[in-house]
Image (cartoon, rainbow over the protein chains, first blue to last red):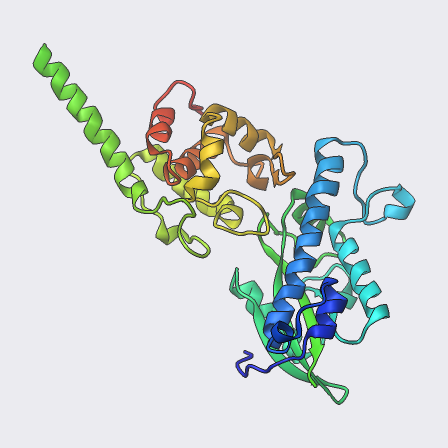
Length: 190
Length: 151
């Protein structure tokens, strides 16, 4: 568990991640955890809006289009998790100030399984402790990172049913509201 | 005759008061703090509401415990439940059994995602949530009415 509170000059990161130029007096005192929490708030809010206003509205309520893992072939909406990953890829092309990903102890795609010890510990913690986040620090390739883990929740019937029925899913008993994985935010410590 | 009526009224008042007593301890505008665990919720004296409490633990709790990601109204939060309760429990039961996408496009899966739940079990869980979230009198009246599903 991350206990050592470290200050972080966050103005550049806030500008990149939140499209906000924070006053220096506020940004300079920000801690890694606070920055990470704010980044996650934006990410999770955007994804929730996509899930509700696009997928639930058009695919579930109106039934005018479906959302599909194979969105190109099916001419369908991307799944909320795919939308999230595409955002992470775009951020990675723009900046090294932070990165984020969607990992799981029960990934459909094996590439989304935890690889570092901290990832395994963090994902297990948020799965065992619903409603809680996990924060830690790890060294990767000679760089020290502040790494945060936030629960990724099944917020729609399609989330749990798709994972339960997918041929590559290692777990088939997800229910609405379950922790299905975690959003992992990584910030290099200077 | 008048005395019998008086006793009946007193008995009903005691019944209703008793039904509310446990619920009043947990219901508040924002509800209990944090994620609501089953142990934090009182056991109703009414057997149907008590059944609803058992059903609530699986699968309703996952979303209605204050899990902010799902958008489901938190049990014990009267602010969240009041606008739903005014629709009437029969209407809410239709939403719960058939599934529902709300005005903000949050999704209530049919039978909480468990197709094996009977109408009576779903109705009992719904009544329990209403009972614990500011609608104790209405919930008690509902489970004793002819509207309540009998499997």
